[in-house]
Length: 197
Image 1 (tube, rainbow, N blue to C red):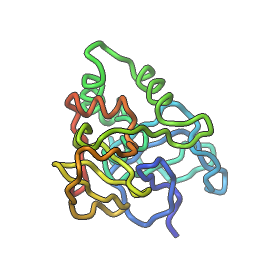
Image 2: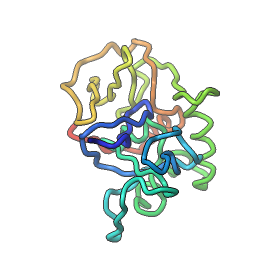
Image 3: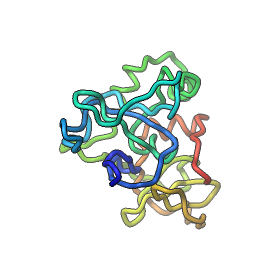
């Protein structure tokens, strides 16, 4: 039985057997029995490498942070996460440099992302944009299905990967899942990794 710790581009925690390529956390989201009881517990939402310095964890331990898994970097970014400043230090520095020309601390990134990622009732906050104005790596929702913007086409997302590319009308107004500041960082040069897209 898969655990409810796979993250979709909407930021939802879903039980799915597909294995992710990245790991991350938002704090302790589960009860002692392993059931998910909250969407987040911290402002710091990060994604990490699956392996780092030989560290091993037993999943969903009582009182320990909830281990989350993402298909890829584009998915983690759409869900509102940022690169970890420890295990993905290089990616974190690239993200920070694309975010602002001025030095920015991780806590500042976390505060800005937290203000953009959730509505007042705790749902994922989205925004609208013509598809042609979005950078490769942004994620949009069309008919509540997430799609990756990539090389002038849309790739439908699933936990196991992306579907075939389909051209799009650049003028089409779309619901954008990737937080606005993250989309700006992508447009400024941060290139998310994709799983087979």
